[in-house]
Length: 402
Image (cartoon, rainbow, N blue to C red; front, side, top):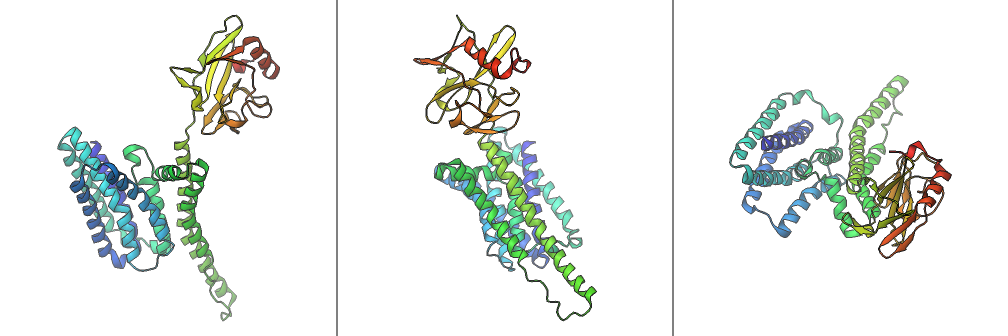
């Protein structure tokens, strides 16, 4: 049934794109439907002919699929009212997804057998019947009131960002893939995010500004004030209607970019590793079966004393300096920290703290503790840790108990 669900979902997504276009360009509905059918058939056939894809061909195949949606965005900047632009939109938004869908179904068939094709055919047929059923209601829709050619292309690109690509196949969204590709070239997460945001936001913002700069209707020759107000109200209403899809597309892009950043930099909150103080000393190895401290990820440790649990953070900063600190700061309740990329984040106030500043006292920084390094082992004094903890958090603080 997996192949049925995938095929049905993809067919519905394809149908929504085509239905949107033919409801706006009703005079070209036959051309658009024929184009969509030919594109989907071509995408499917190219996969069957070239399957299995390997090496550079496979990478180029997947990359074109993702970047085709960015191409739709930027084509909106030069689009006119000719039918060629919605046809290009159909080609870019359906060709590579249909090819990838075919690749997924072939791979599924190699695991589960010929029944995959039966279920996928039923899924595609079901989606097609839904598409045909919706065609009869298109005459009631007046979507042209809300879209121009440039805005419909931006809207479809945003729709593909939200639902298209390989998201359901390998949990990688289009924007995540785009940002990772830019990161491979620029080698800077912040710069990659900035370039990704520029690619996503420039077309809708540009088109929205162009819409706002549409000249107001000339009302000098209208003597009746009520008529002037009516003409201006129609003008403002049209701006609002045609600006709404652009704002929705921009909002979708912002949400998806945020989701891509979270996917590339997930929260890391390791469970504290219990340690035992021997003769007043706590020994922490810099490398063990859990990994090496040089990986730049925080390690958490905890020990008990007289019923209280004390939590520690150990980390190697980007400058290769090792720091140890309490899993708490001087000003917030001791809820601890999580790591995201190059920052640790206070769980209580959500303040991001650069890894490079760890080891420095004050503010929301983790409270540093003293240690000595003996070879590949850190040695910390239990009484020193307890004294620092009690100074800032109170003796036997219930917030530090587990």
